[in-house]
Length: 129
Image (cartoon, rainbow, N blue to C red; front, side, top):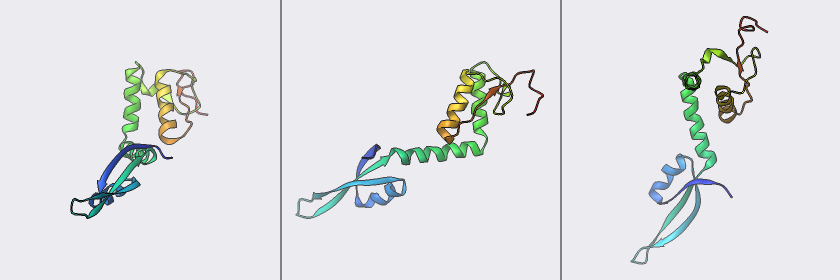
């Protein structure tokens, strides 16, 4: 069974709008009018996967305009650090501070990549490997 984050019941005229927005039909029920006629109600669910894909699209738009770098910089500043002190190159010190934890978690959860960040060490700052 799928995990749905939201569920709604709508009438036929609204179904296409929801389907185009990533919702799925879970079930239908027949409802009666007082005069003996009937209409269908559609039970729709928004899956966790669909919502996750929408959020990833938003994050990609943010990244396109450089907000990922700004986010990392703000996280570093909030931790009393400078973003210039960090690198994803294999030079520097392997550190487990809050800034590195955040950046690595971001890469893993948003891009499913295991990117390691390092705190630059002045001794290695000018060395390129």
